Every structure is written in structure tokens, then in C-alpha cells.
Image (cartoon, rainbow, N blue to C red; front, side, top):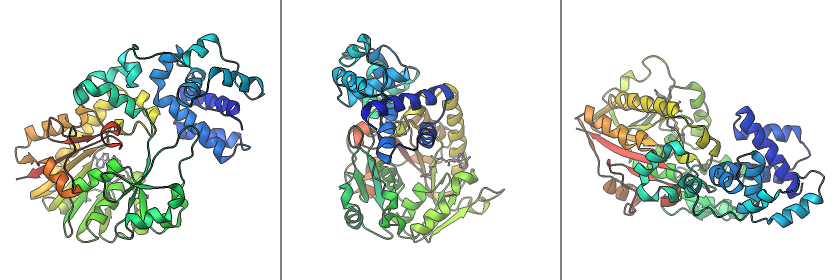
Length: 428
Ligand SMILES: C[S@@+](CC[C@H](N)C(=O)[O-])C[C@H]1O[C@@H](n2cnc3c(N)ncnc32)[C@H](O)[C@@H]1O
């Protein structure tokens, strides 16, 4: 397929996403099934167009004067991919699969200046969240939003139980991987421009052998900050598919014991294969049955709460969720988080550590939660995050990451990672 056909396909997929409220991945898959002539390169390009359109939905709509799927996709082609309106119209005239020729208003959208546009159009953040984002980032909130509207890198974590970063870099040399700047076992492949394809690393023999996992650098950093040590008893209370469990096991050198639990059986299901592939021998999966964790009460050196959250930190990867988030969903996550902190505290032994993590940048899910917990639980105290950072990551805590409430917050702009929050609480 040539660019005009790919643009028409992206408009079709985005229309499907918007009218049927479908996740992007599902709409792209359905399009691929109905259009089997399209190759892997076409599907990747169409995916990039759709994701880029959603990442910058507000700014592209402001430039084009419309938020229709056609306007958004054309804006990506002109404003992000560098196509001129003249080149597009010439290509459209020559291709029977092309969208209609650009109107005058659409041509003007190519060069529309947004420097005086409302801040929401410059930040690509939803309007209703602006007060929260101003609270989180002060005057930087527009720049933080712009960074969150970019494409994410593909990050891997070398699994120290089987391989160091050098071995993984060698195995994946064809993708030009680089060491990450903060996480000691991280490897990163920056996102390419336009129709660049994300490397399919899971077909690499190194992946099959458990040498590495796909894990955003931010997730690696907060897992390292959890500070798990060899020989400890650790409860991963929201283990899900086990991203943090695997990282904890590697930090612990397979010594001690990790209990991996999740209240949702289907989310937990992939963990069994992943533990095997990673060579993890110190993790016990606890399925969600009555009293599944009763024997752990008051005994854990560390309890990790990788809490269910709005996922605002992962908007670069799942930009459709940025525009679907509602105040009701945020409130629901907040009440789950508050209950989980209380639940987690029961398992921490005296002198032990409660690790609270979210992949959100909203203070409501971060400092507000830990502040409310501390106010109601005088037996817990915030641990100095600068010290914890030095111990876990062997560098100084970068400026600007500490939050007012005693945690740290990573963002694409600050650390070139997904957005993550981490706060460590010691039980007296
Ligand atoms: C952010 S995800 C966990 C991701 C996982 N730790 C990882 O690194 O791959 C949050 C998880 O919390 C789980 N969860 C929600 N409420 C829970 C509860 N009350 N008890 C335990 N797990 C819960 C969800 O099922 C979900 O899998």
C-alpha cells in the first residue's frame, strides 16, 4: 500500500475506534482480518497513524478546526510526518484508494500556529484534569503533557538470573539497542519516525530463553526502589501478570521468598509461564481463594502494592484511554487504592516496608493516597526516597522527581519513562 491508502485505512480504523468505542488494538486487528492483502509494514504504518492521532487529539483538532478521524489523520501526516498538503493532494489524485483531496481549511491546518491556542490544545491533556496536572507539575504541566503525547521507546530489562545487559544487547544488535540511563539492567530502543516498526523482540531466541523481559524503564526503576533483598519475605499483593514479581526475583537473586497474589485470576494467569521462562525459583503464586494470604499477616519484610490506577502514566502507549478517563473511574480507583493500602499494611512485619506504586501522574492517586494512609496509620512513616534511590540505583535522585508528599514521580519528560509514582513507608 502507498501512503494515500494507508491514510484512508487509518481514517477507517479511527472511525471504528470512535464510533464503536473499541480499543485501538482490537480495531486494528479487525481491519487486518478484513484486509488480508495488507502486509506487516502497512499494518504497522496504519497503527502508527492511529496512535499518533490519538496521542495529539486535542492539538491536532485545534490545528484542523475539527476532531473528525479524517482531520486527525491528515494532521498526523502533515504536522508529525512532514508531508506537505501539495504532496498529499498530488499523491491522492494518483491513487484510487486515497481519501478525498484536502479542502482549503485542511491545507491551512498543516501550518496552523498553536502557540496562542488554549493550554489544553498545547498540552494534549483532557480539560477536566488540568487542576490535577497543575497541582502535580506547577508551571511545567503543558510541557509534561506535550512529552506524554510523544511515542514511547521499547524498553527491556535484562534478567540478571540468566543474562546481563551486554548479552542481550549482542543478541538484539540488529535493532541497535542502547543501555537505559537510569535502570541498571535496562536496554532501550527509541521509537522511530513516521511508519517505523516496533522491533518484534519476543521472537528473539534470547527472549525465549528468558534473558530479558519487555518492561518500561520506569517500571524497572520503581521495582528497584522497592529495595527487595536476598533472603527477604516479600508479598507482591497486586502481581497481575508478574512484571514486578520477575524484577523483584532478579534483585533477590532467587533467594528468600516472593508471594505473588492478585484478586483477578485471569490477570494472574500469564505469571506461571513467565516465572518459568525467567528461571525464577523463589516465587509462590497465591491464587485468589478465601484466606489465601492469612498465614502471611504480620510476617512480611516488604509488601509491594502496584495498585490498580487510571494508568495516566502510560498514555503514550495507550492514548485512547486518555480521552476515555472519567471522574467516576478516577474515584473508583481511588477507593480501591485506599482499601489496598489498609489491606497491605496487615501483612507488613514491625520494621518492614510497604511499597506503594502507581503508573499514574495524578496526585489524587499518589501523594493524596499516602497522606491519607499516614494520617490514619501513625505506625507508618515515609522513608527518605533520596536515600532509597541512591541505594537501589547507585546514582543521586535526579532533581525534580521528589513529590511534596514524600514520594517520587517519573514522567516521560523528566526521565524518558512512562509516568510512575513510588512511595516507601516503614512500619514502626
Ligand atoms: C497495575 S496492575 C499490576 C501490574 C503488575 N504488578 C505488573 O507489574 O505487571 C494492578 C493489579 O491489581 C489487581 N487488583 C485490583 N484490586 C485488587 C485487590 N483488592 N487485591 C489484589 N489485587 C488487586 C488487578 O487485578 C491488577 O492486576
